Image (tube, rainbow, N blue to C red; front, side, top):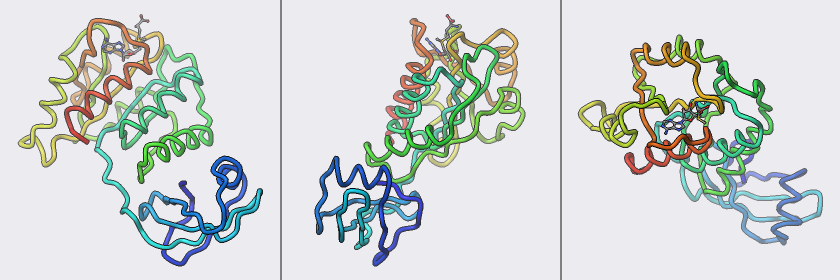
Length: 240
Ligand code: SAM
């Protein structure tokens, strides 16, 4: 379970609300049971239940099990999608190791808002499920032109384009060559909205010095599938 406070041996925590409900009613913990806690700062810790009520479960932290992960340095910049589809994208991007998720507002986006609490809850649950000890950084939605204007000079922007580009796996292998930078070059993947990029957006992205168009194959994938496919290819190439 992720908690908002920094963990440490000897610290005690009273879990309430959803987390108490999960521990008491779903996991049916009893006094003395082990519970794994994470804080997104120091890593993963072993704690024990010292009191198990239905509305409140008390935990005492014992020892650190693992430090916080070094997450792969890959960002996902994804057009904001309809709620269910963006929820899926958030969950899968977390499982696939994205270090940062940047929702992007584009002209053909159907959605223009993201509930930050809901998004945070989805990535936290996904991180718990896949035993990630570091949460992805979840940014507030940003317009495409601002994203391109503020883009860091040292990070490639792989732009998934169904109109064609280098096969994504080949482009990723090239970026990961150690001679390009220690541990490979920093990178991000940009995915368009349900209706695709419009012509002006595609031209602006293609003109950006850090952008590289990549193809995910001959079929047009749904945006969330494209994000999953691209991150899976990156994971396969980078090995983490
Ligand atoms: N423009 C398309 C249309 O309306 O027919 C669909 C866009 S597609 C559903 C959403 C996004 O997924 C695209 O903007 C692109 O980033 C990505 N995508 C889908 N299939 C792709 C492919 N085969 N290669 C590269 N990117 C792809």
